[in-house]
Image (cartoon, rainbow, N blue to C red; front, side, top):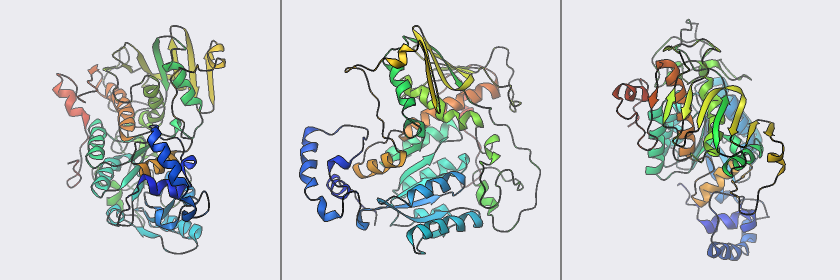
Length: 448
């Protein structure tokens, strides 16, 4: 049966209150006192820093390409979880993932499935880690919620705006703990949180403009047919997408060390606008305190004509406008660059800079707003599963950040301004644009 992780069981298993990393939401004095009492019972759970088998969270890993192989390598080293099953449509990837888990645990107990439904049907699996192509995310998240599993799902969270909203609704309906794989809020270093704190606390004054340097929108797939070797369930790889012949660009066979280029095609992804955009637009949303809202208008570049298949490098300059007047433009150097009335901050992986330099040199004050720094994305998620709290990249965070990317793509593809209501999730008074919120899906893959 699925385990019910009470606060007391968590604290005992973790070695007491001091073992609990920062999670969203601070403990009350009463909770702290209770935690101190519980810590005296920790010796019954085993040595400090360990979790007894009965307390470990059972995990299923769905999709074992390059991203989830990396995740697997980390998860099997954790004492507080147990990987019980892996799933992939490619036989070689699936068997390699099972071997990785079995060798780490010194047994052959890890199950290997083609169908994600077989993972979700297991009562001993409490949570799933999903890293399939983007066009599968919403369908698998919906199924996981209905199976009462907690969820870690890679970014970009969805293929469409409608999918993003549906994921919020289904996660809330079933009270699931959901972490979006947007690690820039955690383990890619504290510089992103630092940049957002400085912006939030007015160190660059009123934010006027932000540029987000990420790649191109996706285009429709025209890849030619290639022979399909045995061992890949190609129709299952396609899933909700339209039927088409196999091409190795979309699903390279076996274990490989690169990110496949299915993300360049509209049937499966929003391109690099959503791929890295889900990271960097997410940082913009965080800095602008927009985790529960978003822009109100998106505009294509001046003179841009509608283009369903933009050529690489040409689609730059689409802009989001927020209700407070801040404009966020797609283009510029990699990362996010914030320009305010009193200065500028640029942040990307591995670097942060400001103009003037004093902005970064001056520490935050005692009364300044500070952001959480969980440090490790999986630890944050697992702690929140036990405490039934929302992680730092809750489903709504991921859904609203990827929606910014979808809006940018729609401006390029359809070539006109679109007014967006982030509270109702509608293009107000624009029935044509309402049709653009979702994508076609094959029969049997409804969002209902």
